[in-house]
Image 1 (cartoon, protein in one colour):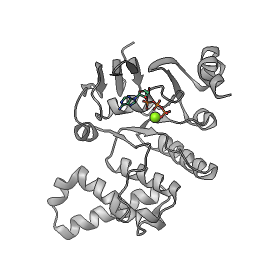
Image 2 (image 1 turned 90 degrees about the vertical axis):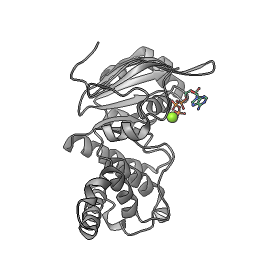
Image 3 (image 1 turned 30 degrees about the vertical axis):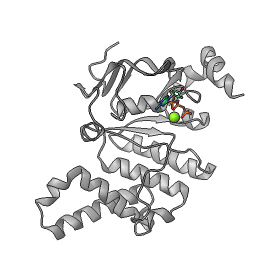
Image 4 (image 1 turned 135 degrees about the vertical axis):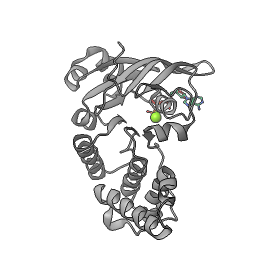
Length: 253
Ligand SMILES: Nc1ncnc2c1ncn2[C@@H]1O[C@H](COP(=O)(O)OP(=O)(O)OP(=O)(O)O)[C@@H](O)[C@H]1O
Ligand SMILES: [Mg+2]
């Protein structure tokens, strides 16, 4: 099914590593403002799928259409500028810079040119204010002047999300944003994503191993297994699906 209104349309997308079909002919449509959870056991191909969407890896076959435009195989910086931004499974920040400086770097990459139209001081002030506003929104406002390397693990992951949002994405790819977090930190991130999803224009694709988190957050769940889409549907449909329970949820027991 091809959906003209989809923000993201993936068709026949595949990635092989030698004999491994890491991503195997995936078809997927994501509507604007939808929050889609991508789940599946270790090695199912979730991170590889994100790597293909974000331009970090070239697909073996297939197409990625974003907002009606074929972005297949474009380099990461161009895809990012078009509005797809991703977080990494591993924390990806500059530890020596402050939290706010980390966000400023991302903002500069986004609209460095526009800022050069202002005087240097005005441009700096604007950057500073925008970075602070973003940190406030993520509950990190009071840590803006702290060196990023000194933040707690959970706050580092939040900062990483701030850096992702600083690129003004329309599609946000979150690869296990709560990995390694305490239950309390996990709740914080889930609540944040829920709020962002409800109060902003963002569209989310999120990978998460904790089923409670997934069921509480997603508009739709896509289950990957051995590189392919095994099933997709609402939370209730996936919960009730025997094929999913056997292939995936069952494996967790
Ligand atoms: N750069 C690579 N070179 C070779 N094989 C790779 C590479 N990246 C991933 N793979 C293989 O592709 C398959 C899918 O891996 P991927 O990391 O995408 O899974 P995942 O669903 O993200 O798993 P996890 O839940 O553990 O993060 C695995 O068999 C993995 O070993
Ligand atoms: Mg992964």
